[in-house]
Structures are given as C-alpha cells and as structure tokens.
Image 1 (tube, rainbow, N blue to C red):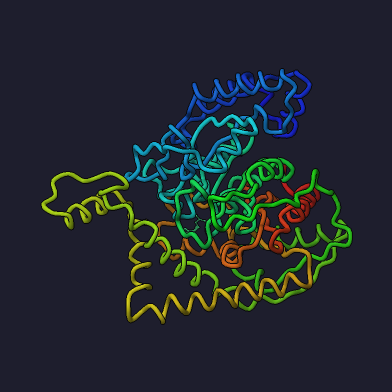
Image 2 (cartoon, rainbow, N blue to C red):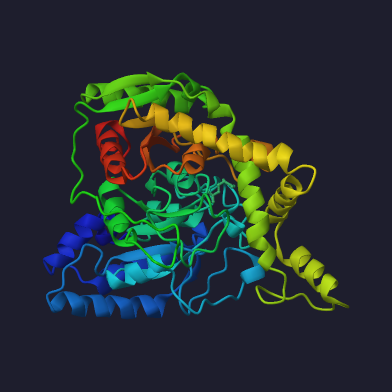
Length: 476
Ligand code: GLN
C-alpha cells in the first residue's frame, strides 16, 4: 500500500503544505486503493475523472499560495447527500438513477475548502439500519474481517476510512448511523449538536433527528472537517452553525468531570463492558474525575426513537410515489396502482417496515397512545440528559453493546434495533457525541467508546474523545 495512505488527514495536509506530496498523488493513491479493495463494497459511485480534476485544481490553488487543511485532501460522501451531477441513490432502487441538480450545503463547503470528493459511499437504504445489510446494492464487508458487517447506516463512510481508501468522509446520524459504524470499523465518528450542520441537500429520514457529521482516523482530523461543514446556512431553517470550535484539541483531562451511569453497564456484552471499565480507569489515570449520574430513561429511549423516527420517515418518504420523485413502475391502470406498484417494487423490506410502523403510530386511534406519548417521553429524556450534563462536562458510555456481528447474524429487527441502545438518546436530546476506537473484543474486532456533551460543546467533546483515544484507545 502506498505510504501516503498511512497518514492522517492532518499529516497529509502538512506534507502538501511543504510541497512534498501533491493532491494528484494522494488522489491517485486513493483511487488505486479503492480499485484494489473494491470487494469491500464501500462505494456506490467512484468519480474518478471528477476527483482528478478537483485534485489538479487544488494543486493549482496551493501553488497560488492558498492554504487550508482540507485543500487537496481526498474524502468520500455518503450517498444520501446530494452531489451536483453525481448519482445520489440513498442505496435504494427507488433512486437508482437520481442525479441531483444541486450540491448539498456540506458538499459546497467541502468544495470551497478544496477537498477532493472521490466517491459516494454505500449505506442502508434511506439510512434505515444498523448493519448496512439493507442496501439495495449489497452489504459492506468490514475491513477487519470481511465476514462481518461494517455497521450502519453510514457503513461505507466508516469502512472506507478504516480501509485507508480516503482520509475522511461524511456520514449522517439519525439514531447512531455515524457512531455505530465508526465503532465497528475502529475509526472516529462524530455526531454534531442538532442544528450545528445544515441538512440542506441531505435526503431526509427523520428531520427532527438527522445530522450530518465527519468520520476520520483521529478526533483532530474530524475537527478539521467539522470546521468546514458547520457554517450557518440560511437554507436550513434549523441551522445555527458552530462558531466556537477550537483551533487545536487541548490534550488534557485534568479537572474534567466525566459522568457514568450504572444503567450504562446493562446492555453491553462482556468484551464491551471490560473496555468500558478500562475507559473509566483511563479517565481517572489521566486526571479526570468520574461522577456517578443516573439515567432512568435509558431503557425507554429505544422505543421512543423507533416510534418518532418511523413516524417522520413515513411522512418524509410519502413523496416517493413514482409521480414526481423516484422511479415509476410499468403497467399500471390508474394512479392508485401506479403508487402501489412503484412503492412495492422499489422500496426494500426494512424501509417498508418503517413506513408501516410510522403510519400505524400516526393513525387515528393510535396517535395519542404511541406518537404523542413518545413525543412527551422525548422531553423527559432530553431533560434527564441535560440535568446529568449540569453536574459533569461529558458522559461516557459504550457506543454499541457488541463489536461488529457477522453478516446475516442480525436478520431479526428486534435484535438489530437493540444495537442502537447507546446512540439513540443522543439524537433524541439533540446532543453532540463522538465514538472513538477503544480496545478490541476477544476476536480482535474494534470496540468504540462514546463521549456525549452539552449542546454546542462539540469542540470540547472532540477534545475529550481525543484524550481517551490517546490514553488507552486503539490506533486506527
Ligand atoms: N440504526 C438506526 C435506525 O436504523 C439509526 C439510523 C441512522 O442513524 N440513520 O434507524
């Protein structure tokens, strides 16, 4: 493997600053690696010629004296984030040939910063899933053991960073889809505060929960991507942006209060629990103070998430009916048959399951019992996390209850939904959280730990994650 690919994003950028490596060299190395490891199935589209022309442009910009950490750096973008002139399929048969007429805000920001987008990554269809097995274009194979899943739904985005095919990527996270695959693949995955990053051009799953965020090899690299994508955008009415990010991450846990709850001990398998206890000890060894908190709502969050996210998904996905949005089925007699045939033929099973759950919990007679109750419980969960974060700087828990399962092992929805138990409360409460690689399971697969913070403490959370990673984590 080309030595360039062993560098972190920050190292590559420093080498490009010194004129030792060109963006064209780095991009060619990435494209070559993507070609040679194509069986991982990380990419749904590789934009070779566009990438090389962006790289040439970035080299010219650097020659003209322009600076910028992302200038000329090869990155990848999840396939639910719109890219002008480049297919954006959401890993669905419904959008298998959709070519957006505009760039998502985050893509515009990446291009402005001179990042080189080399391709669009595989995912669970419409971002619904925990394993990437619900892609219409096949599962992603985890680079650490190809018989295992990458996690989902941003499976391609996490695995392409772990496989050293690119230096960073963008994923989306509605209930854990950045953090959980990052944990399974041994990389850093960051979900920003709700409203920190514009969703303009992100194809919606559940709009009150969706956030775009970076996946990278280190927290410092993730910070660099976050800086570029977290500007305020008038085209997303929820956008606030982040204007308080640090220049660099401060490498100390001294005096930091880190909250742990006994509820976090339930739910994880013995490997994850062992690493969680080691992470707590690492925090103490590094001068941090462990604070006991209680999260009574821990078990309720999963049910709340699957009611609310499915309700929003059913509504967001009603636009795909074969009339204006998405493919149209052949051989229909009337408009009703056109809807039914198109939706039956082009949505996968998991998406249909979410639409059915969503319409059920929203239907008259059930609305109060399910949707309204979940919405009220959401407020209680959010309040409880914010109260816990009043007495500490961050919460620490595992990212997922296990390391990556085998492909095919989690076919039953109740089993696979359970893997979101640690991640969904963060979206319900709109908080920032990072998953950092921390140790290995007994079979050698990576394990991730999650650091959760107060709204808009995104930079602090990356700094704490960085310390944890350096203090006892696994290098990815
Ligand atoms: N695994 C969760 C789900 O299937 C989260 C998905 C996501 O964050 N996009 O809904």
